[in-house]
Image 1 (tube, chains in turn brown, yellow):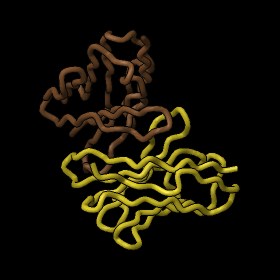
Image 2 (cartoon, chains in turn red, brown):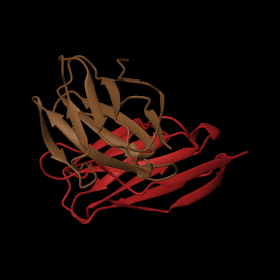
Image 3 (cartoon, chains in turn blue, purple):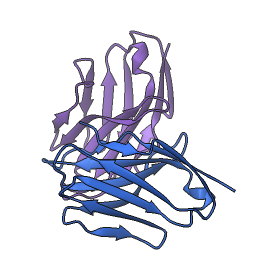
Amino acid sequence: QQPVQSPQAVILREGEDAVINCSSSKALYSVHWYRQKHGEAPVFLMILLKGGEQKGHEKISASFNEKKQQSSLYLTASQLSYSGTYFCGTESGGYQKVTFGTGTKLQVIP
Amino acid sequence: EPEVTQTPSHQVTQMGQEVILRCVPISNHLYFYWYRQILGQKVEFLVSFYNNEISEKSEIFDDQFSVERPDGSNFTLKIRSTKLEDSAMYFCASRANRESEKLFFGSGTQLSVL
């Protein structure tokens, strides 16, 4: 069952912040985050393992709440280059496949 | 950074024809995947492959689909008799090991079935 992301779409002005949420009905071992530009392959952003750690660098970070089976991606001081569709990907048991979420389309405007 | 290579970048075929999509994963990777994405929609898992056999497949991956790793470097997806609804971008991905390493995606093959 695929993870559900919210919001489905968001428009930001440069410099604004955004939060994208990912929720799963299954117990999770890890959560991946990818960004996809139109017509291109998904590009890896980060992986979070169970344990509730927060990862990332200064402007893009993420958290993982294992108990709630949720992850959030935080984009701060957004730049035009952040535009794209963000997908979370989750792994449950078996570690063999990553199931991608419904996607969040982010558009940053000047 | 090492890359996953996919060929062709675009494939146009007639309904009912067979197509083979090719991928060269990163050389020391052990896990291989095919995903597809219908325009504007989510990235859907098709199949995972490890140790020369399918480890998991989705309900999309029916008898019309097959995968092979014929020569230790290429990883192919065959669709035996294409349908209109098979039109999509097909992504190959590979992964170094099972301990939650990231997926490396190829640039995709856009399949159009007419």
